[in-house]
Length: 255
Length: 263
Image (tube, rainbow over all chains, first blue to last red; front, side, top):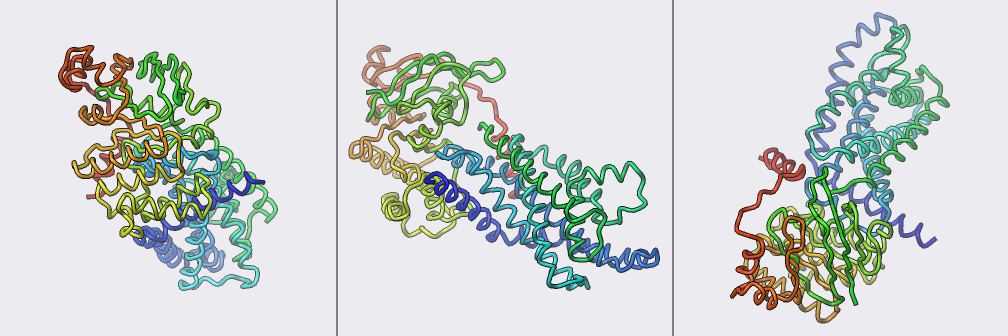
């Protein structure tokens, strides 16, 4: 009991730290909103007419959930990879010599990063409203937060896991180009999943983000490829797996 | 009573020994200086003491606990001032201390009282709510010292604590460390390149070179053994005059990159 109290305080203070750091960095906030806004405007209006002609309906309705998911995984992965910055500026050592299990440190950081990313996704939701996006049912719309939070948590944990094994920023562009970009583009965030070549179909089915995008889209736009249960189950499993992998790798860090 | 016991400690990086079979003891309440040229193995040893690195072989006992098996007990026993900065620049002085206090499970009332007291001691109480990134090097160092003492450790490790500080700050800092050693009986284990500092402050000294302990004893003994007038001469006689190369590690490279980015 005493331990649970102690650990939850540790998790809380690390969560709080991530939030404080984020709220104090205006440049980061503005910078991370520019990209999703650009995607919404350029793709939404650019491909809108073609999508409509092809019988897909309103493209903004289709696209917005994908862009919300995109902004979450970008912020989440970068948030997780902040471990490298902390290594660079030395602060990581302060947390590594603290007399608490490393997994509590990892969990606190991850939940902090996840909260930030979910909030980011929420802001993108409101930007989407400005561009013309309308959720089908305003009362059930908050349920999308469940899927948003799961993507946020799992990808922050994944970022932490990757960053725990990296000594410096050299591998960062690699992660960006070979992991984050493909995850996003091959998740059904931008295009419907019906009628795609088998190979692409398979990749999309393996990509956990696909299920997050699908869940959010199902709730907000009433369009789905899988089912809510499948989405929820796969995302939960993926979140637990990344949290486990992240805490294991984080606890193995030596500096 | 020994508060630190080291027996046949070895640490190898890719078969190259950084610490090569060292053994020594530090007594409770002692001020112990750990000296050596660059790349001799000082920081590696301190990292093994503080659970940041796992030894390849050998045994360490810190306050009676083994860092490899009882890491939490060991971590609760010491405070550390690292060689390079380890504060969160985006947090205020108070927040950095508060963060530390929570991590070390110092109850809120005691924590708040100690934070105010320590901020006064290191003369930062007026900068309490300023972000650390606005602090000078000396101020950061003082804040780190305050932080290292917040949870009342049994041992404090100081890895080149006065590096890059002006004589005023250095003097101030040492008088504080000395005071704390006498009043609270905290064991002080420090490394430095300033020989006169080691001579003046330490009860006992160990000199490490190429991963091996080459001399151990009081400053007087080391000087007498080598027939030297100063500790610096004794040090040079024991470790030779060749300048040491130290491989840049990943973190150093990263810092260089960080500096480039921030331009």
